[in-house]
Image (tube, rainbow, N blue to C red; front, side, top):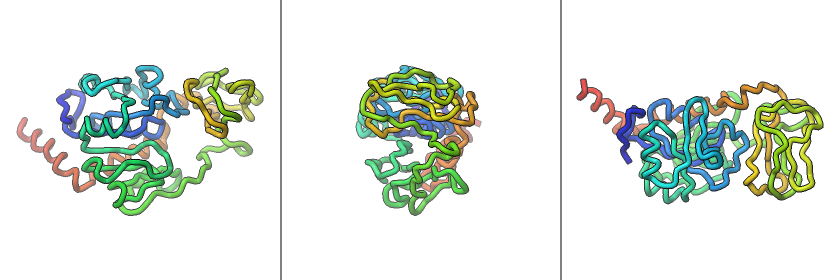
Length: 287
């Protein structure tokens, strides 16, 4: 789907990003700023924790802005086209395979961070990129970008898989995990807001009669939306002991590093050269 827009340097290279969570949002931001039209697919009730920095939160708020880039919930491809023409990232909750057929993207990025192989395949687009573990580059997708924090974060893998999920948050507390989990099934009723400073013992949320209290001082960096029916043991909140409130509302270094890896894959993949060359030829003709 080619899109004529003053907002895009590469209007003929549509990118479909599957998932609008905080890590995928770093990718969306990088691609958008680099001049690619980006369409995002999300669940009808996304399982977002860091909602303040997730373009997928447009599903709940109808429109959201992260780092100056707007995203809007749309219900049709006509509405998606209209949003893109105004420099807005469209977020759509239609089944992903349907959106794939509608858009015929040049690039697909699986940013759902499921940590296991889902339904993305090598044939979905000329360039298919997956984030993190679960996929095998060269078989399930063309490239994988490493998401595990450390020396290899953001590196592009053209053959093989990413490092296995450790299940340990990068910035853990000395005694407790940063992640707060549901003690029972149900809907989360918030008693604090993202960005609030939280004290030890303070009630952050409730599920039914069960209270979820902070085990240490920190800032509430993320909280799942109350529309989500959570299962016992699910992550529902993120309490950051570093207590830097501004970090709640800006993209993380990790997500931006992963976004940089995706851009490297886009500009270095051999199959992208005809599409990128088309833009070079167009520019030369205009001169």
